[in-house]
Length: 119
Image: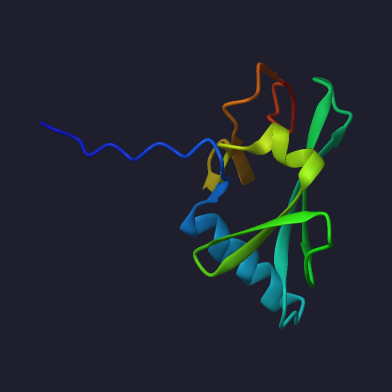
């Protein structure tokens, strides 16, 4: 049995899955936001040194790199982009927890909950 493998995420972008993009759009609709995108960033903190930050915002700042996937704009601050390039953002609603999941090839260590990492 041959399984189709998913293509690798290019190292120079950040990718959001269709499921995660749909969930962001659902949250924005719930909050009656007509114009929005997803700010994806990192900040110092957490048990591994850096924490992921997600926020639905009206638009990018002058410092943000804008990436579009599945009809959703991602706004990534240039300082965060170094730590996030090549990352896939997915959404899980399985038995092991519900929420956004980062698959970050730059993370050299992650905490048990997956909310923080070191690079």
